[in-house]
Image (cartoon, rainbow, N blue to C red; front, side):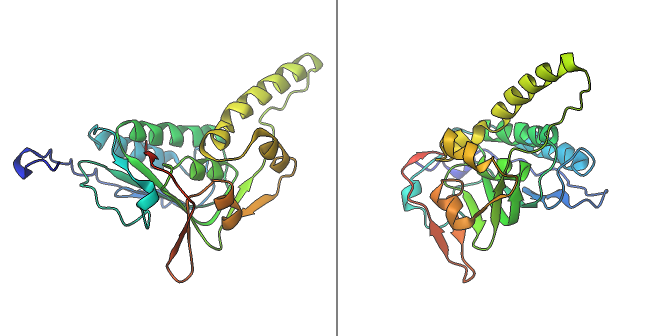
Length: 238
């Protein structure tokens, strides 16, 4: 039931967003653009602005949608005070796991406050950018029809030269990457065997239609502006 207008909570104004660094990764209003390498230098200002954006959100109760009836991820009209939305636009080669974890920590804080995280892959979401793309709110993850998602294992972050440290580094590397790749198993229909197979090569480029089949996105935006959607059942959107 709609609340009387006088009792409806007022939405806070979005914080002023600055892009002093001129980086390809930046925020404008509630829109996050990740269009370049993801690392501490290119995302330093973005992470600070994203933190301010998340802080500005009021906590709202979990908003429920009948996703099976949704005709477009951009055509639903809840009041912003009921359901804030953060849009993520991606065309990135990936980058640092550590920086990606910082971005996802903030986005998941926003999700916890009731926000919908709506992702759009415009060109390529590779490596760490792929992780961000699949962690959007189920039902609100879109890929352009000519875009791609690249899943790979990546390169070791350790450079050890002592025989006694090699086994320790290998063990920690496996545990760290298992945790980092867990969203593929949580947010998509990929099995562990399928994920392992994709990560055998560094160039597992998946088309938008392949991603739709694997549950890595929910919609494909076609060149004529129409949307093709994955069959979705009603579910909570947090």
